[in-house]
Amino acid sequence: MKPMPKHDGRNSAARMAGLAFLLAAGAASPGLAADASSPAAPAASALDTASQTVGAAAQSLYQGGSWAFWSVADKAASFYSGVGQALYETSYMIGINSTPLERADFVDSIADLPKGTDPNPPAAKTLPAAVPPPPTVATAAPPPPSDESAETTALKPIEPGLLANLLYDRSARNPDGSYFVPKSLQRMFELRTQRLSETEVRAGIKLNGRIIPDPQAHGQVEAGLLGRIEPPETGMPVLGDAVSKGQVLGYVVPVVGVVDRSQVRREVARLTHEIRQTAESIEMMKQFSFVPFREGKIIQMEIRLDGLRQERAALLPMLKTQEFLRSPIDGVIASTTAVAGRVAQPGEMVFDIVNPKRLWVEATVPDPMIASEAAPGTTATARTPEGQTLNVTYVGSGPAVRQQSTPMLFRIDNPPKGLRVGRPAAILLRGEHHTQRGMPTPRAAISVGADGLQQVWEQTDAETFVPHAVQTQDIDAQTVLILNGVKEGARIVVRGISLMAQVQ
Image (cartoon, rainbow, N blue to C red; front, side, top):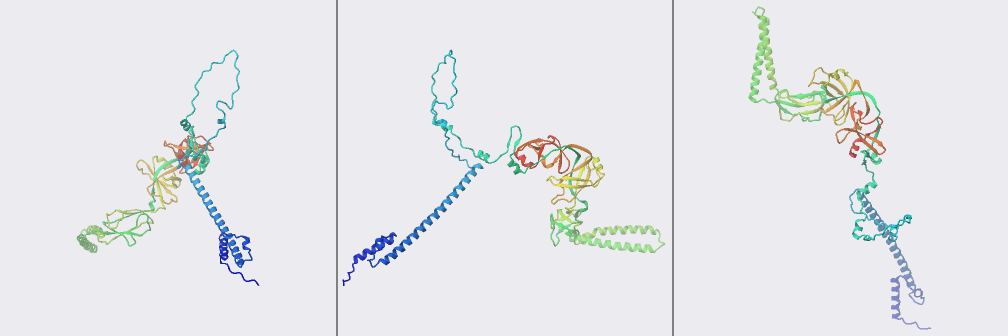
């Protein structure tokens, strides 16, 4: 039996240092790992396997994280570059960016040929033998272009407005006076056209008038005595408030001093006493038949009794505590002068009430024959300065003349909302016996040019329009008659005419 070898401390320290090196590097020598003669071989093998597994996982994690980071960074850089390019191009299109564009050098293949040679030499001409060639005069060769001239002949940067014209169609004025309007602008303006056809229509008569309230639906509230205006419990109505018939709008408290009120009361008491005495005297006189001049005396006393009663009736309102201001109709407050505490004079208008659903138009006619030929119930059209079209019915006219004109009344059928009393309105009444030949067209097709003349826009081609000055006559509130200025069969613009004026 051999003796057990002694433990060597230096060998154990060397083995531990080698094991630490393998764990730090992640790779070990197979020969050392498989050393079966060492008592620490199983532990070294397990540590080696664990270190390899941890190293592989760390390497995979590092590679995956690096790939994800650089992928996100690449996408962000692409997005930033695209947004920057879009903003850069948009600023050029709208003319904000004035930075010149970078242009690549233009390479011409002809410039590579040797100097003095022509790429397409002309055919050689044979001169007559008898004619000698002219003597050649020595001329100085042109100097080579300098650097400054080369810089001046370089291409200039493209203007931003030209880039915008390349992307968008724009209207322009042609040399012949017509206007080029591309289809894109026509669709944007929503242009609509219509062909003109000549016909014969009844001539229209234009009457100038103004909107007035219906006399049967118009009321004014006035103060009947001198007094101070007081509001009711519900408050003082203001402009635009709807009121009903019989509604109390306010009160008028008589303004009388203490001394004046006492005198009025004393005078009323005296008149009342005299009225009673006179009435009793009349009754007693009627009971006696043999009184001289009995009938005459009775008549004189009756006249005196009436006078006394009238005097008392004139003084009694001054003793009233207040006067009620009531609405006479259903309607809307059109105007008011009512202010709490203001003193109103007798007969002063405090409230003006109008029913907005019942309005008329009062027109003045210089020719009385027009009023005499119009029959009550005749329908017509009216037009306000705002462009509202109203259907009206003729009511009648009076025999009186006002300022050398005959007034005519027209009732508005179903007045639109927002119609104001006092606004001007033009009545277009068709004549019964007069006719006119022309080309009817919608009123929206007529515009006013820069020179103040009426004009229409004729479409001569798919994208070409020409303005024409025309003479028109009113037919009704929506149609006019073109008398001259454009030929029959012309296609004119009937919608979007205001935008065409901006093109002009």
